[in-house]
Amino acid sequence: MNPDVFTVNNDDTIREAALKLKSKEISGLPVVDSEDRLVGIISEADILSTLEEDVEFPRDLWLPNPFELIEIPIRTALDWKKYKKILEDKKEILVEEVMTSKVYTVSPEDEIYRAANLMSKHKINRLPVVEDGKLVGIVAREDLIDSIVNKREKELKDE
Image 1 (cartoon, rainbow, N blue to C red):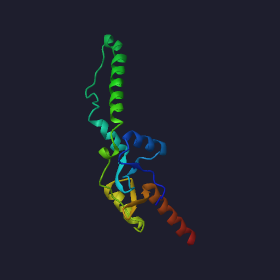
Image 2 (tube, helix red, strand yellow; image 1 turned 90 degrees about the vertical axis):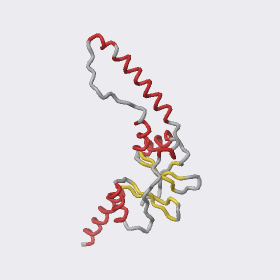
Image 3 (cartoon, rainbow, N blue to C red; image 1 turned 120 degrees about the horizontal axis):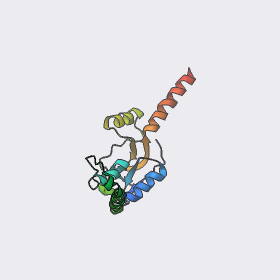
Image 4 (cartoon, rainbow, N blue to C red; image 1 turned 180 degrees about the vertical axis):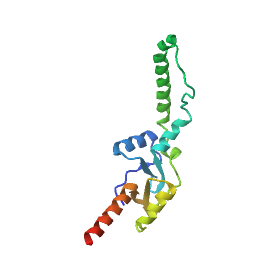
């Protein structure tokens, strides 16, 4: 378990969450309320899902004729302005509007195998560690792999 957990508050914006994800080079964050209780988790996928409904990508192939080649840079600039506006509008959405509320958790006393089983079964990358309703740590897939490797190295050393 890693006791140093980066979090966001449920009333932060997804822009703030995205900046934290990028600066910490992680793909998900536990979401806490004003009393530091775990209320959800937000991932890069949750943030990206806010764009799906507004961004329509072309479904057909368009091959320009020579006269239309002049028009391509103009179309591209207009599309970029449209997408930039969509992104600008979306950045003020609150974390609580897009976070995943149903969060699988473990306690500090749980065996590593329970964490591994939950991650595998539910196809998740991280598990918040909760004690008495409060977030006390996080276990990521990398932590599980490190633990298994360290345990094996210790066994080999003891032989």
